[in-house]
Length: 406
Ligand code: SF4
Ligand code: SF4
Image (cartoon, rainbow, N blue to C red; front, side):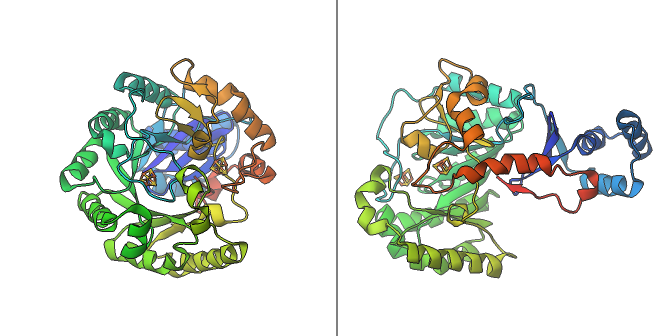
């Protein structure tokens, strides 16, 4: 399904399956709007030519209609920002709970056993309403272990699903039983990410005994329920030789992709820095292996490793925001873990924090934060947003839609 959202420069076209994003100009956006309204082809041409006072090539238009007539949805956007350094987020990473059932020794979080102050259902629904009004496309529920708040999560999932969000769950897989997987699917979770650190021996060293078996069982249960699964792996010194094993696991179980991220020396993982730290020589080798793997398996798996790529321009603060379990709004989970946030939705609207908050604006204007642990943000990342503006796609670009990977 392709979903469009109006912006002051035209619109955003979002591929729900891949998460790919394209920025399109005003004519292209209007064309898509008219296609979605099932207006007749000849009328679309006439209307576009009148509204934009410009000739529309019938071949481009036909190609557009052919591509989009069956699978296009419009998301409302009540708050098209006038400032050109800010659009509403595309994705929210929602750290739904800090509670976890594991004690992984590389974990970037400082998970806890119990927290009374996490957002309750009413607060969660209220913020989902606001996300909806802003036209946000995707909610990723993460943790801790989000399935530890399953009943609450299912209710909020159903609520958000009815409003048209793409819903994804990020889990260690232990609680993804047959029954829970079915309940997740029925609540609208069609995408899941399960962590696998390597072969059974390595996975269990990092995540605890018998966790590999349970995670794999979880993957199978989710896939059986038609939930599309990707594997997430934190690459460190401990599992740098496991890349091929992970790919084979992914192929064997039929997951659709693997997301490799780097180990970050924060949270619990900081205590085990000697075990996990990757030397710069190894980092080069890992990068090469991942590039090669991407080439070799691109027909079967979507392999991403943004945080290893030199040119990675982190989307946090520009396309992505993070909501912490107790309501703090921040740039990304790492920043949240470091205690850096813009304010709390319990006292301010999310939209105000996102659009006018100092932290977000600093990032957008100056590329302010030095994310030494994640290495993604540099001064360069400011380019991403402006490049997207400068390369707005027109209906002539119909065969070249994918531009930004969210
Ligand atoms: S890595 Fe994930 S599963 Fe492991 S302790 Fe941290 S939050 Fe829990
Ligand atoms: S590069 Fe910085 S802002 Fe981006 S995800 Fe990493 S820590 Fe967060």
